[in-house]
Image 1 (tube, rainbow, N blue to C red):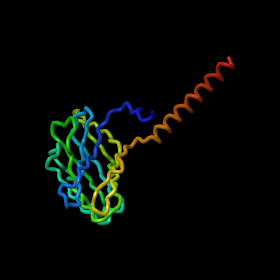
Image 2 (tube, helix red, strand yellow):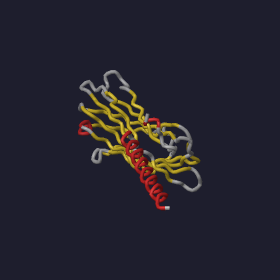
Image 3 (cartoon, one colour):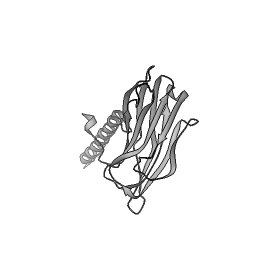
Image 4 (cartoon, one colour):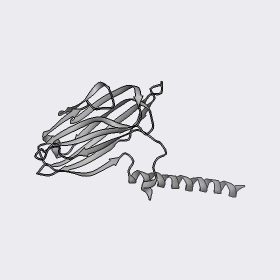
Length: 190
């Protein structure tokens, strides 16, 4: 199907790993924000996590970056309750290649409902001596939280969705059709 059409471009990406409640009675949940460099050797990762949904009205989010693959934090990942977001910039001298933890979120929801975590403005800088910048695809995680504080993952989506594949394919078909008509018209005139 269309889902198997993955872009030929390889790029670093973030992944959300939701770890269920640490203690039985606790309503808090853990979300590990992990990085996959997809073969690139990178120096710096930066971005913004935006939080949305009813749950954000009264939420407590702690961020731990002690076990991060990044060792230097020019902009430490801290949750801002005013902007309902986390801005971060982290780096590692000599670069990092592979999969590893960026930071961990400990989320204490005090209300039920939906929680969305959206990674935007993600950028990585390659450890190539030039500091080449590459954008990361936006990624969204949707979690539903019930009255017992149980979290249900409702889905994770990437920047390129099914709709975009359909639009791109339709554009290609239109371009081919126009090109074919133009070439065909030229042949008749000769």
